[in-house]
Length: 138
Picture 1 (tube, one colour):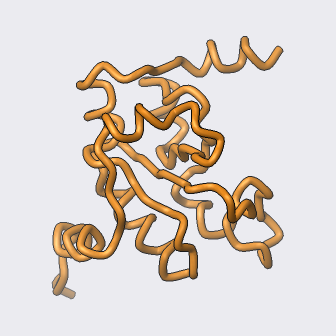
Picture 2 (spheres, rainbow, N blue to C red):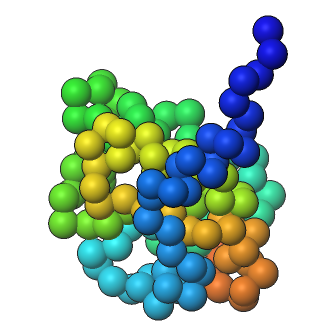
């Protein structure tokens, strides 16, 4: 069966409907208590590349379940209507699709980072390894 709408068309459609922030705009809001950065990348990416300090780690495959209060997998962090959730992935494609999906679920306080983690790193924004994150929690 042929693909009638490719990934790029899906990403382009999502980008037209979601709020997108530059790395610089998000970096300026890292300390803002009304912002929760959400890393939706796979754990292997996190282990290999690190993440954004303070980001909540929510794998893309579980995101809808973690966000929905009716789900047995709901994570209370997503129940805070006073926060804006800013998602990112590796290049900004998955996060655009995920942001669109969360909007389709009814969330209005959601956005994503243009260019994803690759652009974050390229612009010299702060990062941390998972080991450093774990060390801070002990």
